[in-house]
Length: 466
Ligand code: SF4
Image 1 (cartoon, rainbow, N blue to C red):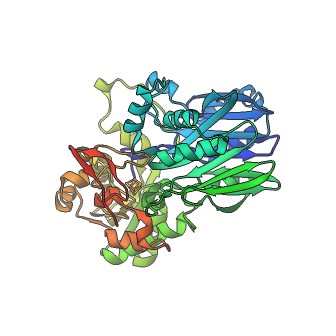
Image 2 (tube, rainbow, N blue to C red):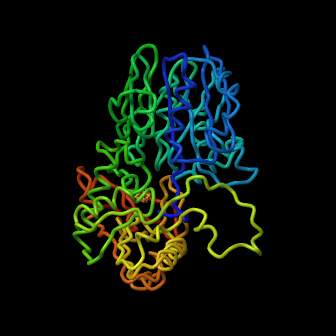
Image 3 (cartoon, protein in one colour):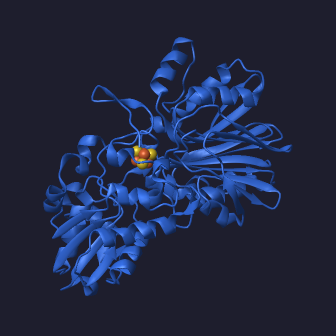
């Protein structure tokens, strides 16, 4: 996945029962930075008083002034990393969101995307709800606030029963954390423990950084309250198939995370191995697009017996550049990020493995760069099928028209990229690689068949099944 990337919208992290709750949350968000790096925030409850700090930028930038972290006192905290579009309006959309309702505070962080948000927002609007953000997450708070149920937990469950789509959520109340995952389980959410402290995170790599151990996943359709009374689990009585996002294994999750019951690294390596079996090629060297394709590339090299080498160096310190576009160097965006290792590529038949192709524009520039470094042949291998359709469940993707896999055949993409051959992993093969049955996964962006009803595309309601 190159910098034309699709983006997962968020990472969430929560801590219950630790006087260093904000500090642990900061570290957890740091480990989850890959899930969203344009804004971050933490809210704590200090004996019922909420303390909040949030802002634009990566976690380390938002909390660059340590005073901002130090003032977040309290034993309970939730936090959020978010990918968002830039612009003034997005400041309002930075999570956590807080409301005060029935004289008590409630905060929320969300990873996912609701599919019935337009309908719900219209209904709430007509009843007088006033929205402060353009985020669908705020709708959930309004539904909780307007629920007629008596207890706080019942009001939250009542709201969750009305929403559809993808949500891995954390609520902060004055004395508890409530974690919830949608009945399909699109996005991961895991429970961990550090001595007597409970933690909840989008991915288990966030437990490792604070020395906590993984306990279990929050189940699809589960609402788990964590308080001084212990753990209290409820099941939402909504149904529908499980639909874990297969893209988490392909690209989003860190390889050192355990998600959907399995290490992402293991699945990613199997994807690479199968890719080598499905599409063998005679070559001298195999290189991966760093960093996200590294693991699949290792799998490809192991299976094919072709030597794995580092053929591209990625610059991890790319920030904004201030080059006048008029004077800019051709393909500067790619050159800033990658540099070819000429000694590896020159005169060689090269297999390039990537985990996915979205628009194809950056892949094309990289192929040109590898060619200019002297590669004799370039065989591009992709460890997933062509992306042909957008995601409605929390992944920010280009429109169908912009997805190269939707508008061109593999042969046409091969020509566009300028490679000697291009091959993708098959849909069947991809779905067979995790240990769970293939019917457990969402593959909507690869097949156009979505596990639940989604908003209209081109005037038609889309839904489908496995
Ligand atoms: S449509 Fe694609 S990215 Fe979205 S949840 Fe399904 S598999 Fe994941």
